[in-house]
Length: 115
DNA sequence: CTCGTGACTCCCC
DNA sequence: AGGGGAGCCACGA
Image 1: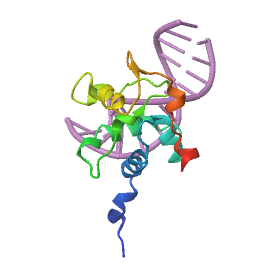
Image 2: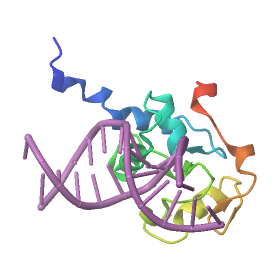
Image 3: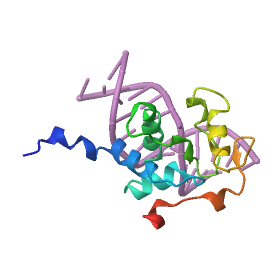
Image 4: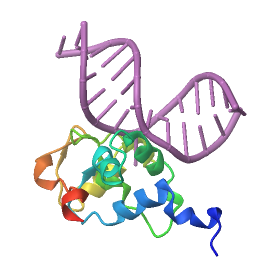
């Protein structure tokens, strides 16, 4: 029935989006943990590449909850403003200082353990 | 088809 | 401490 092309919902990007949508409020995860959960521990760059396109995807993807392995907001320049990503996190109760998430490990959400 | 690039991460020197 | 290389894989030129 389904052709190869109809399997687009299994694409790496789509699987990334599905995981990101499951990150709870006030929690964050990393590019590497998402990649690892999807079976490609070395493909963190792909997760970032997927986030680059996340703004024109539905349902919405809370891309601000994805940071690098040190809890740094490396993707903040893709939110259309210097403080947009940071403000979104703050509005969920997360403290950000100099692009670093305070108490990062306390807010870290690991899909491999949670899902 | 090949090449360069990237919101990453790990390893080695 | 910090810089370079490699693996990852989608995408556009």
